[in-house]
Image 1 (tube, rainbow, N blue to C red):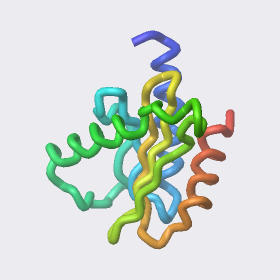
Image 2 (tube, rainbow, N blue to C red; image 1 turned 90 degrees about the vertical axis):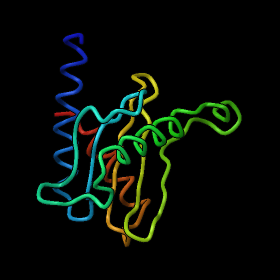
Image 3 (cartoon, rainbow, N blue to C red; image 1 turned 90 degrees about the horizontal axis):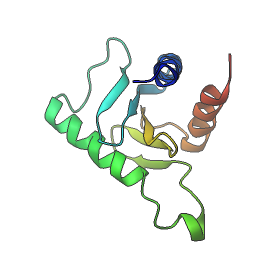
Length: 128
């Protein structure tokens, strides 16, 4: 891994840690193009709903493939984020197309998705 990638990943890890300090966020992690969680994770002390590692890996892989698709980019523009509201959680993915990774967020089910998306963008674009 190049020095620039290591530096970027350290910054992403700090941002993921900052996100998990938000009360409504359960999980913040970076998933690579292969659907593998490379950093971040669940809020400290929180038990994931999907506690089987194989199921979590399959989910990361699915989200990665869905978020990096480009077939409608020319007509509709690139994906800013994909959100899914479930009974127990809201899931939002933010693709980083140039680096072929994505940020995956899991939040409490009553969260306002648009407000959460704005908060995530603010944290990830805030340069120290």
